[in-house]
Structures are given as structure tokens and as C-alpha cells.
Amino acid sequence: MRRILLSISGLALACATSSSPTHLSETQRAQKDAQQGYQDAANSQKHASDEQQKAEQAQQDVYAAEKALADAHTRLKLQRSKAAQAQREAGQAGRDSQESSARSQDEATMLQSGDANAGSAPVPR
Image 1 (cartoon, one colour):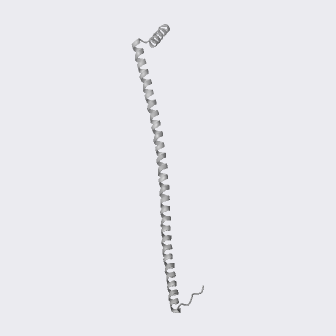
Image 2 (cartoon, helix red, strand yellow):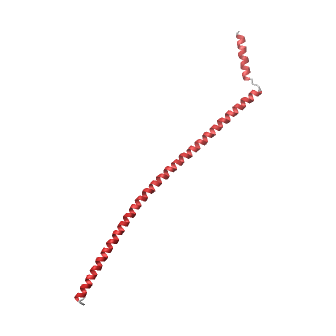
Image 3 (cartoon, helix red, strand yellow):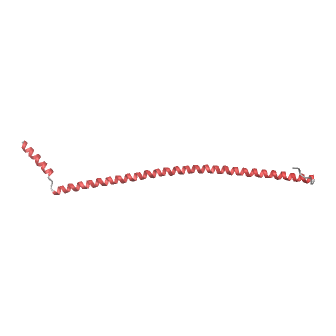
């Protein structure tokens, strides 16, 4: 009984290790197909990884652009505020100058009218 069992085991082992040429080429083809599938998957993963890196860089670029825009907007508001203040100051300076010119004109007119009333007396200096 033992001999028969060993003989059957040996026969099964022999059959498993000695394949026919057709079976071997099918095995090789399946193995090649599996390797190609693995390579395709690895290439797809590499491509996906590259695209993800590009997306992350684009997101960083967007963040940088948004920050630059926010900074520019802040500078614009500040500059507009400064320009408005300068306009107010220029307007006040213009009004002050007009008032000063009007006073000087009034003083000159009073001096001239006083001179006309006093005759041709020289004005002391």
C-alpha cells in the first residue's frame, strides 16, 4: 500500500514538473501578460504620481498668486488713502493760500488808501 501511494505521488510530481510544450507556452504567455499588466500598472501609478505633483505645484502657485493679489489690494487701499489725504491737504493749502492772498490784498488796499489820504508823504521804512 505504501508503495502504491509513493508511486502515485511520484507520478503526480513527474506530471507536474514535466509539462508539454503547449502547456509551457501558455504558462509563459500568462506570465508575460501578468508582467506586462504589472508594468502597465506601475507606469500608470508613476504617471498619476507625476500628475499629482503637478497639481500640488499648481495649487502652491495659486496660493502664491492669491497672496500677491491680497498684498497688492492692501497696498492699493493704502495708496488710495494716502492720495485722498494728499488731496485734502492740497485743498486746504490752496484755501489757506487764497485767504492769505486776500488778506495781503486787503492790507495793500488799506495801505494805498491810507497813503492817498495822507497825501504824498513818504512811507517810513
